[in-house]
Amino acid sequence: MEPLELRRAVEAGQAAASEQGLQVDDAIVIHNSDRVALRLVPCDVLARVAPMGHLADSEFEVEVARRLADVDAPVAELERGVEPRVYLRDAFAISLWTYYEPVGSEIVPADYAEVFLRHHAALRQIDLDAPHFTDRVARALREVNDREQCPDLPDFDRTLLSDTLSGLSVAISSDKADDQLLHGEPHPGNLLNTRRGPLFVDLATCCRGPIEFDLAHAPDEVGKHYAGADHDLIHRCRALNWAMFSAWRWRRDDQMPDRDHWRVEGLNQVRAALDRCGLS
Image 1 (cartoon, rainbow, N blue to C red):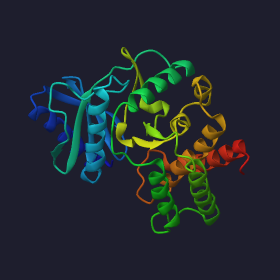
Image 2 (image 1 turned 30 degrees about the horizontal axis):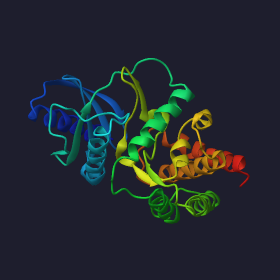
Image 3 (image 1 turned 180 degrees about the vertical axis):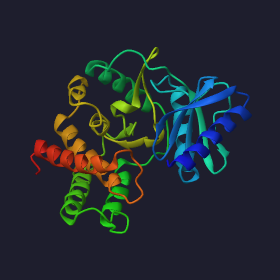
Image 4 (image 1 turned 90 degrees about the vertical axis):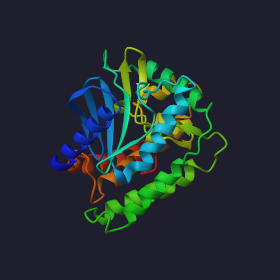
């Protein structure tokens, strides 16, 4: 967010928490992109603040968190001292979560795979109306093919992303027999190492698809520790994920920090992933 919008978002997050009886003297910005994560002190609560355009995503994330808490999934929990819902304040949607202090070092592949197995097992225990991963691919494809939405994307790269998104989406989704609920974007930034063990965060991306779609967001070694995973499918899903990542970076209104770097790096990663699949 730009400085003025960020200041309003911080004030909205503080106000929403204070109105629920939490003691808030200050807010520390932990993450700032199209949405903001704030550590509120001294109550030590995490506030996720999003523009009103993300209201539906925020409400969906809270519902996912509520369902998963009932089956003891390895996910971050909503703040227990307040009503588990989305609060509206000054054109922002705010949800309040338990704050977890990061501990230890990088999560090793075997532990990453073990928490995946537990999370996927928990997701199989809940009934939730969630989109299929191909719905997300279709949105990315529309963006790539719309020159007004992605005006800076060179034609050669536009063709690369369009062909990758459409072709791999069809190939990966051809057999839906093993589809289940997934996290959706369980990359290392969305897996916290806490005193409770590794916990997944950012649950608004929950969708349906093969477990390999989730595994493709993790480091390469993780899939080798996940029993029964199809490693060829992981590689195809990884190429698809990089194509979606690249599509978002070329949007005119994308707000990811260091966007110009990631525009180039994303395309390089798409080509490298296609090479590993033998699809270049």
